[in-house]
Amino acid sequence: MMKVERIAAFCNGDHGGNPAGVVLCDALPAAADMQAVAAEVGYSETAFAERQGDAWRVRYFAPTMEVPFCGHATIALGAALSRAHGDGRFDLRLNDGIISVEGKAEGGRLFAALQSPPTRSAAAQVALVDAALTLFGLSHADLDDRLPPGLIEAGARHLLLAVGDRSSLAGMDYDLDAGADLMRRWELTTIALVHAETPQRFHTRNAFAIGAVREDPATGAAAAAFAGYLRDRGWPHGGRIEILQGDDMGIPCRLFAEIGAAAGSSIRVSGVARIMLEDADAAVGKAVAE
Image (cartoon, rainbow, N blue to C red; front, side):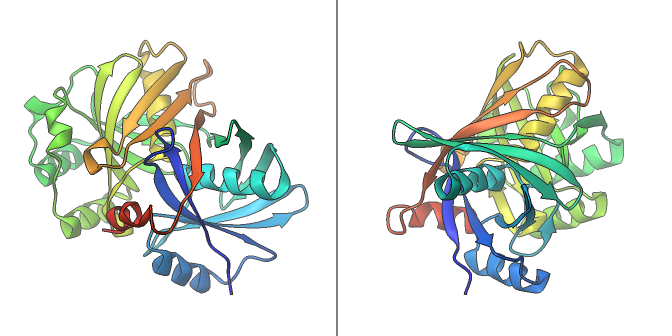
């Protein structure tokens, strides 16, 4: 029987946060078994980790599929590892590449920070952009010309659509099946809708239909990819950005990304984590599962 820890990542203080399952294993189970556990847990992702020498072998599963990298589940994993093994830095071996996560307890809170896989970005194809705008009921006039649509990556592939008006985020809606078809066709993990409040402060929403999840309250992988995109664009990020996500779901989350100067280099994404209490957090888990 696998013990699943339920940890919310990227919390807004003691509230909100994106719930993830974490399983620390003596040996990773068969993929089918991990998939079944992730489906039963019902969160957008569950991380499974096995100690191998000086590092941890990690795999991530959404309710319907394995994903190559998940930021919020990595933050949750960092919190779980620090609770089990003390504060420190932990090397993680993913399906494709090695990253790290730090976890620590301070002042009664858990903090974690991941170093993402390398980043890259490119212009999004016109056909993809048109299809995504139709999916969300948006038009080209709704977009922010300063941040053109892009394909952004940091361990997973996302479509970025930046909108000029915050209300476009508040009104986000789409057909789940149509969204899953589009993401599958274009090999996307999420579609990120972003609004720039200031050059260093952003509001985001992330559709994750391909994982059978309408929306992620906090998406660390997309945050890292977006930070890399800003660097590639020469955006005046000042070396650090704050991302507000989940507010429109009633699950406030806060993500922080530190951006180095080297093109394509790893992004440090950090936030607060908390152990979920079954009764108090039942509504959070239900909102994410739906």
